[in-house]
Length: 186
Ligand SMILES: Cc1cc2nc3c(=O)[nH]c(=O)nc-3n(C[C@H](O)[C@H](O)[C@H](O)COP(=O)(O)O)c2cc1C
Image (cartoon, rainbow, N blue to C red):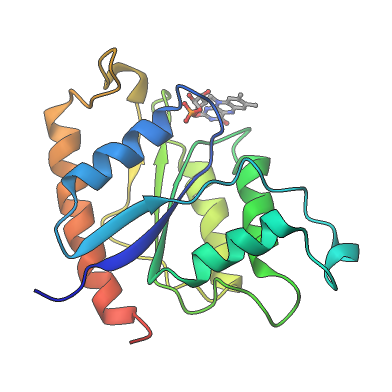
């Protein structure tokens, strides 16, 4: 079998009991063997400051190396005030600079948004896509993934108990694997 594609998973919540992190874990369990998913942490990143471009903070350099080493990126994010959480936007900005040294460009991408609310963080999903267009990340369009009612989907141990969502995650991951093959650099 071919080597699995390495997918950097960026979770847009720092919360200990994050529904998005649980969903990312459930996605990794539902993914085909052609994908290897690993969460790349963003909570340690300093706030992006353009003054640091000549000598970026070590945590930012390490983050960029992890993203650069991945074949694809997958964002799993909540919605804050109808947009992406600041921590996620910060990670995107950190990865995009210094100018000309973005680690995002050309990486096949995907977006899953997760909320307890009914509309599944649609606003965050699409605000994120606006940045991805600019960053030259070809983001998979179908299936769309707006997962609402997520607060009712996990048991006390954090395991996904909703069968239809598990099935959906499997389909999403299979489609994403095909998307990565179609858009990967090599
Ligand atoms: C600052 C803030 C703003 C929020 N705004 C929204 C929102 O616009 N839409 C929404 O569906 N949920 C909103 N929520 C609720 C989050 O969806 C909920 O806290 C969710 O559990 C966050 O994801 P997490 O569990 O992965 O941390 C907001 C929560 C916070 C803390």
